[in-house]
Length: 318
Image 1: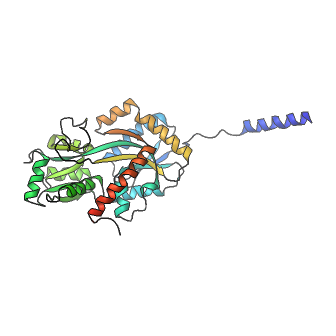
Image 2 (image 1 turned 30 degrees about the vertical axis):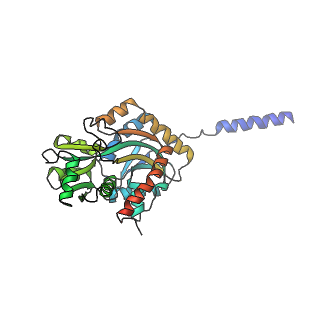
Image 3 (image 1 turned 180 degrees about the vertical axis):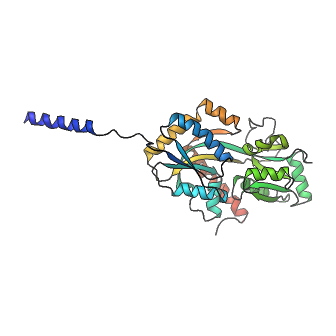
């Protein structure tokens, strides 16, 4: 009996040795969905990150572009993708908060599992260099005298730019600006340079592309930005407004915890890589890492502000 027991044990061990080892995730390329056009800020950042993903991960990304409707098309693709760990994508905030509140979007912020935040891009107020306006206070004064005459360019409705416009309108209802929406920052910048509009609310990364031809009046941030250290914040100008666009990466809600954890580890390594940070700075991308759990909490904290702003503007869906 003892001999038989030993034989059984030996056979079991041989069977275990013969079994293939569990494959490490990821075993195959991962689809990376970008909800905006190639060459835009979101794509540029993801391309920088891809370079370092290839340094740390065993499989590459395959870029899949799903632009349109202010990101809704691409965000929906991410939310509805098979949650097998092989489709992830970039999200923009506050877009993913605003869009379900005002439109029949097929996702909510709870449709995703957040890997991490990678960018915090403050918005700013910019005019053309030959503009008569030397300060934001001058713009407000002029808008009070001639409500609706000053035209401000914004990238897309239900975007961070739009939310800043709504916040401004609530703070200065007697200094009305006229909003003009554009599909992308390239169109917005071109419109300002061509005299089609008088000013823009734009995020720093996009404004920096035409910085030699713009005058940036103020940055809508808690503190001065490293890319524009000589430009005062709106609060320094006596205007209590903070507004930014944040970019993160996420997976569909049903992703397995082990795969989500693996993604979070990989992205954290990238975000701490000094060469990655140098490339981000060179590209004018305001890098700021926040882990996935903290970012989910941040989004939850922004929900009430977004709902209040849309409600005051009559934009909440019925």
